[in-house]
Length: 204
Image (tube, rainbow, N blue to C red; front, side, top):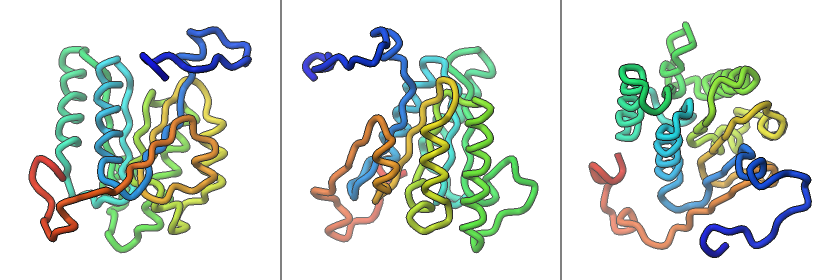
């Protein structure tokens, strides 16, 4: 793909503009570091284009706060105050699901994940966001907390112009099959290998 030019032009009846603006399902998977980081970078780029951003973290506790959350929430505040960029919502599993009236617990992970996916489905049906970041969403599918076929059918049949990025290891082949863009992060070398713990500004 030299200079960003596709090597082929499919015979799909679409104009170049229509094809360029076709909404994507994107998957960041593999054993290497950077899957979520890349997705949040994508969210910041989308914010700059005025998109409505919805972030849903399916594994991290509501008590755990990462640097990207602070940045994106502040960008959301900037949009509210000045109109720059687009609106941002950030939700975490459990008590972080802001639409839930029940107090989340760390023990009921499966129910929390199912509740989060049910809300994402409602928002996709309502075309709430332009970009959905479903962070670490491959794990609830792998663990059987969320039905893979339901996810695949919902994402493939979503209405309107909605982009979705899913992160996490061991993405199910059915998800990869319906995705438009799949990137596999490979583990080559990491300080963790030598017993070094995560660093401020690098891991969070």
